[in-house]
Amino acid sequence: MLLVGGPVLAESSYKLVWFRTDWCPWSAKMKPSVEKFTSEHRVESVQVNLDQTDSAVYRQYSKYNPRSAVPYLVLLDSKGKVVRSWDRYVTLEDLESALR
Image (cartoon, rainbow, N blue to C red; front, top):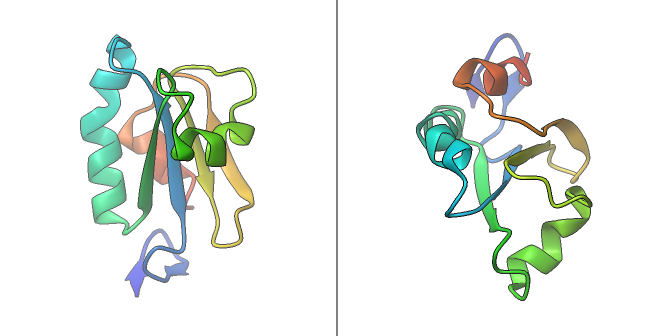
């Protein structure tokens, strides 16, 4: 168990779905924050490359980003319910605030 801002979170109780592309400079800038967040808080990370619309990952998660915004992040709880979403560049602090 991991204590984060009060609630006790089970390992992989959250999933961060990150819609990105290789050509988006904001996606590249966010990578260190996303990696640190998912590592430190034991959040499962799913990267969805919007340039690969024929992939199984895209088909599974595209419903969470109907406008195909980039960058776009969605934090899901263990039941697949959206906890928070961002349609902009996010910092580590932005991501951590969703767990409080």
